[in-house]
Image 1: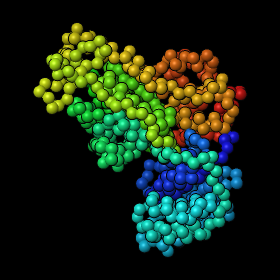
Image 2: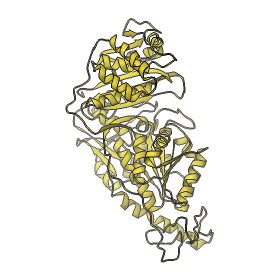
Image 3: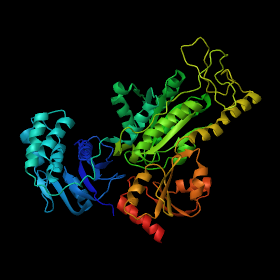
Length: 553
């Protein structure tokens, strides 16, 4: 079993500040020298319903939240009934006794106390912070400092309310002891890492129409626009966002778009436009359950084949998926750089679990790869689609005295439209020549990740690797996890050495799409598929049991 973990669950209605409270609690753990992982479960509602967040702490790196909680804080009645069975052995559950009375747990009259301290209606989540601090015996002054930093409105009312709640609670348990202080740790979500990675490579403009779970990337870049210098554009639709992004590239801007599967389906035509016009474009596809609108706020990997086969017609693309928060940063940097190097659209494929979960990670996140393209030499006549041995043609952007043509039709070297047979073949061959060079360029970066050295092999990709790595912390060292990061082009040469025995394949699909893909590409024989398709991330202990049973069967 993994030593020294502690999990807090906070539940309440949408609009009650559950996620904000979880973020503050997770950040408090960092101040105490602990690693943390925050995971949010919420419905597609503005108010009401049921939301909850999990925060797990550990003195060593933690890759996923645990579902059995040592401390549960219920801001409403539904949270109590939903999560009473999620209480770990020896755990404590607190509830708002202004609205409910229960035989099990500790009641605090949060609603009544709020009326005594606030002039206007507020939400009870700040009381949850006081419960957390007092229950774990954290210093009252630390709690007050956290409130002043994290809650900017109604500061005096907040302080008096939280102080009274704190005074009503006896310290009952404590967080794990930090092995050592961990300076440099910061709490980042996957989408924040993606945004920062693209910015580090030179991103100028990000276009999107909000679609969960990619929406928070738009919100983050918009909130950081003044500091980062990235223009975040909320377009009127996904079609508009993708076409505006291609237009921005034509003007010389380094651009990206983001959406989930349904929105990205609307971007297919623009993705193909980027393919034939050779417009470098970074696309972030953050998956959720589908098809159609599916389940808006949960996680899935159903878009794997969709991403690999995005767009119509034949053209090169790169598809890669991060397995860690740090990789989300480095991969966004790499992909924007590769897009500009080869003048192609690229896809960063991820899932809600990585996009919206947050983990303590150390800064700086990694080296940046500045996105630069082959720029036209002013001494030569300019042809946008000049035929070259590498397939890469020079680019030129306004202002310029040269005539600049980008074309969505098949074209000549000059950019003029053509339907001549020989010209079509020559231009398709030019674009196809990029493939070999793309594969070599991708090899500059880590294309697979391998965790462990055991003989019991497991294959996964994307955020599923986070869940598996935490599950393996609860098993012995006889396991090895292999994670392809670059999916197109797939690093077959690096993966083949791991195909000498049947492997376990784990994915968030109802059909073994990733396993089938590996069978086709590298001939991997599957020992067993572990499939999960209810939109929820694995509890590490449950997954550990399933992994062990699969190999012991």
